[in-house]
Image 1: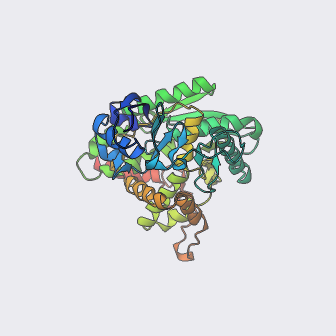
Image 2 (image 1 turned 90 degrees about the vertical axis):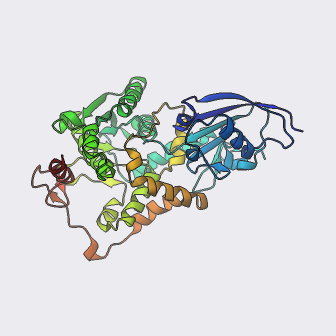
Image 3 (image 1 turned 90 degrees about the horizontal axis):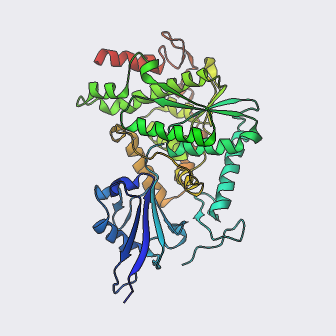
Length: 101
Length: 312
């Protein structure tokens, strides 16, 4: 049983527009059987934070291509992407590269 | 799985893996490398000679924000001076907020800013008026094409107004790759052939233009803005969802998932394309109506404004 985690979830580069324009969210993820990874964090975000047009943020079980994911300021590509296991006080930042120019 | 060490400084944790080289770098080393690469692009391509007065096309968006910031860092070494030129297309809500971002940047970086408006330059045209006149007619998709032609001219006028000798725009590798895909999909061999290289030398009296970020991927532009804590405006233009470019962008993102260097590779391919003599566009001449550089009898601006007048 994994203990509850307290993490910071942040949206930027225009992605915040899908979250009522709110960039920073301090969230507590409830304790559960499985360890929390990005894959089930995305499911949690879709259910609890996402306000509109989910297809602009999530496609399949991952983020829409063109949205960058940084965990503690490091590209998730370096950390195992969806399989990265969240730690207490992690900060996860989603930046859209798809807006404006 | 912890992030590997930065392969450059061996001190910090890596923050990203570069799309082309696969190098894992920390945020600070990445930003230094990014700036060095833009410097190399400008020097190797002889894009901006010492003494140049450079008009930066500034929209408040990520690309022009990064371009202005990097060039400001490099300006002493390049021996150039910078002017920000912003274009007001007359798109209420969208452009007002973006221009506010440009004004903040100009104040923070102590760079002179000039705003030129479609309404002043083109006899009262605004994109809102154009969009109203085409709404529901099936021609609204052409809004971005029309706006692009007007913006190009407006930037030229603004640059002349501030005494610039050169124009730079923030187009990155992904923008160029999207354009390459669009030209292929439309069978536009003439544009494919013209699109190569990092800019135009300034034939026929037009100011030389270049794109110093053309070899930088969109992802790296956004990460640079993030690590340098740059403040930019990131909302989509209200008319953009109509544009064909969106499909090219989507296709490119799918390709990049399988091949991270897809955008840079497409730009490279387009530069290496050789056209059969019959497909080559004729050398540019002057527009028979306004005298601006034109590849046909009328320049793009005269062409689109003439066709709009018939419709409105």
